[in-house]
Length: 288
Image (tube, rainbow, N blue to C red; front, top):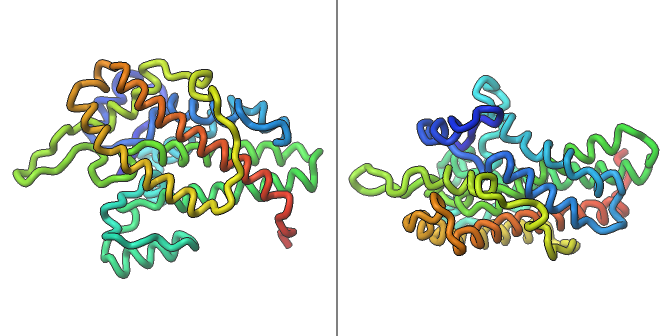
C-alpha cells in the first residue's frame, strides 16, 4: 500500500512516510510541476480554457493523493492501487487491454495475488484519459456551457497525477522502498521518500521541465502507456545506484539530471494524452 498525507504537514511528512512504510509518486509540488509544464506546451487548437488552466490542473493533479486520507476508509481503499504497477509480480503475464475488472480476474484468479498490492496504474491512466475525452466532446457540442470547462480541468488534472506516477521508476517495482534481504532487513529503506521529494526540495520548476516539449498524438494509447511504464521500470537500478551514492540526499549534477529527465517524461506523457484526448473527442459518437 502506497500513500502519504498531502497538506500543511511540513517537515514531518518525510518522517511520517518512512515510519508508516507508505509512499506516493512525487510530493504535491512534483505533481503540480508535471501538470503546469504540460499545460505550458499545449498547442493552440486545444481550447483556451485548458491551455490557460495550468494552475487549476496543477491543483487537481494532487487530488488522488488527497483521496488517500487515512480517515477516508472507503475512498482510500478504492484508490490505493491506482498509483503503481509492480511489474515483477505479474510473473511475465501481460495485462489485458480491456478494463480493470479483467485485470482483477487475472491477478486474483490466475496469479492468486491481491490486485491492490500489484497495482492498477495503467487502468487509472486510461480511465481518466477517457473521462477527459468525453469532457472535450461535451465542450465541442456546448462550447458556451460554463460547467464543461470545470470538469475538463478536473479530469485533466487527475490524469496528470497518474502519468506523473508512471514516470517515477519506483512506482513500477515491488522494491519501491528498499530491497528485502534474506535476513529480514531492508536495503536502502527510505529511498522512495528521498526521490519523492526531490523535485520539490531541489527546485525543479515548470519553466525548466517544459522547455522543448511538443505535443504528439498517440494512436494506440494502451500500448503507449504500458510501454512507457515498462521503460520507466528500466530506471529502477539507477535510482538505487544514485541513492547508494547519497545523490538524492545531496544532489549532484547526475542525480538532478536524472530526476529532471523523469519529470520531463511525465510531463511529455501528460501533454500527449491531453492532446490526444482533444483530437479524439472530435470523432466521438454521441453519448446516447
